[in-house]
Length: 211
Image 1 (spheres, one colour):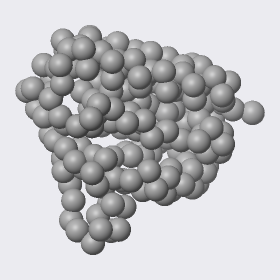
Image 2 (cartoon, helix red, strand yellow):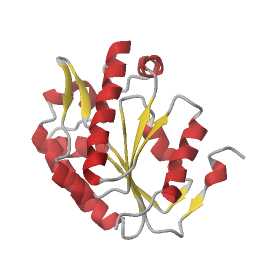
Image 3 (cartoon, rainbow, N blue to C red):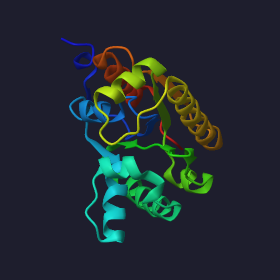
């Protein structure tokens, strides 16, 4: 039995909401897919997918997550992000009544000129009311290798840029956590994938629900 399989959770505890974030290539998408088989019931809000759908509808043009990642600020406006933020608040308010929820999102994007941070307002984050924040991180070397191996629309970055991006994303997440008064877990995703999945799955048992 793998480490991940050993922490399978059949939820008989109150439903939790975890905000998952991290820089590109930290492993967020792979983690959420794997959690679906360990945490039940679980609903996932994949922000990139929702944003792609919203921008496609607004522009009346079929876009992919890869094209959104490669173009980023050239096609995604702060107003687009704000609109999807409101979708997220409504989604979580409904889903947490019947299921655990994990939110896969990140506020920092790599742009041609450097970086852009398009965060939630602290008021909106308070409405979201997650029980904990989980930040996946990895070394710059691992991040660069993963992006080079499978870009999927993500711009290639230097070691310095990869490290800086990780630091920026962790800083934004820390601000969210401090404003909401909730715990923040920073988890090294350069270790074997099963170990990462097991650590995050345990959070659904470890954290206390919001009052």
